[in-house]
Amino acid sequence: MPDASIRVSPIPRLALSLEESSQAVGLCSKTVSRLITEGRLKCVQVGTRRLIPVSELQRWLDSEAQDS
Image (tube, rainbow, N blue to C red; front, side):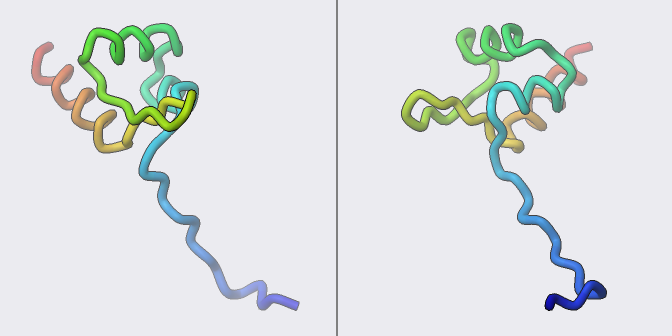
């Protein structure tokens, strides 16, 4: 039986799905998809799945904050 006092930290996510990325930045998935299509947000294609690196979401948000 595992010791309940030992806490295991979850492995931090390096990339998020389109839907997870949308939720993380508070935009609809169509908007995030459009940002990818326009080249404003980079993603990694794995088969039919698109993954957006967390660092790329942070870069995009920082860029948007500076432009406003």
